[in-house]
Length: 121
Image 1 (cartoon, rainbow, N blue to C red):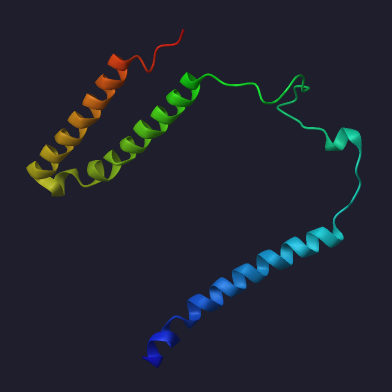
Image 2 (cartoon, rainbow, N blue to C red):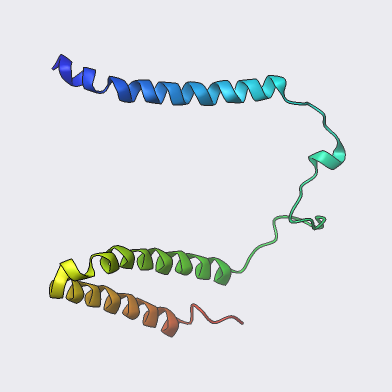
């Protein structure tokens, strides 16, 4: 049982080294870095456009819905890459599984279109 813990020692050392390096770097930058503060330096900066108004303006739910749908379908497309790389070795079974996957993806896309999730007003 003692040999089991010894086999994890390199991992523990790597975690401790990484955490120590991060702590050391943050501490050194805090003590060595400049500490000048001004109104202009402390102001928020957004793409070179001066800020105006309140930052808590509500966004449309449609914006977030389209963003989430983009991430969802983008991640599903990532699953097609390993299939394409191993297409020949997977044979007909792999093709049928990918057709099922794409069919479910298209059903979900059709559902989204029917619900009007992609329509902007």
